[in-house]
Length: 398
Image (tube, rainbow, N blue to C red; front, side, top):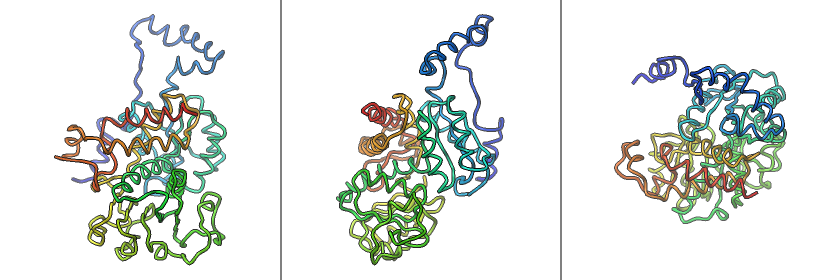
């Protein structure tokens, strides 16, 4: 298949783009028209003016999410600009609708600064029940999300950070069970200390991890480093003999890569403890290919970010259902407990019998919990009921 041609044809035919707006109410008669617009529309306007929460009753606010980007970190392509990010944002909208029945407006923002971007989002926020930030470069993404969460009373979620973290945590819960290890006892090495890496590390810490070593291009993050910023400085370890990835991998139980292709050599796998766990999540090419990793260590459990290998860490397992639960609970924010609830729900679903429809969707004859199946498949229709309900419960338990 000519992938380029197929992708361009998919996006341009039979009409450009991947989204359209459909009316949810009839507009066939004069009476319909008078209710849809003037004079009937004045009644819900007055109700909302008196009681702003009535917007959830009389408008689509409660099922509408904004997917917003400035295009500074599009997929693995880098700063492509706001307009070029639109196909990705439309794609995100398709997944929201397909998996969780959530409506989306994709919004691409040209902004001269983070503060200008923030103000733009604040200004349009009354339209929406939630804000999904997407493909925004680090470290600006941290400041943007923090400020929007502070200023808005609806859920704000940067999926590149937290969506990855939720799915990584879910996969790790099950990988640890298979490898007979405990989260509070293992040594975890992260290669990559950007948005995804830092968010993953923080979520695992909140779930009980106690020994996390972060490594970036310049080596181990320790408190002697003078080039750390607010976002990763709290993850720095006390100064030690560990300075490089090579040092850090000695007796490591878990490697989580959110970095670049081919950055984990088979030789480094030898340094890991018995029954290691390797999540090589760089896309499209992982830090180490599964066949190389398994050739070196037959005792490992492995995940990647790719759909053509077992155990794909895919954000589509998280964001539709996290928002579904948050919207259903009319949550004002997405909390740590809601993310943990999503992770645990994903982990538990992987232990249940896999329906025939899932096997058919992936051309499989059999799939069961084990080394090659530690997280559910994205096309599993049980995900919405299973994950969203647990998120909503966590939101309501505040």
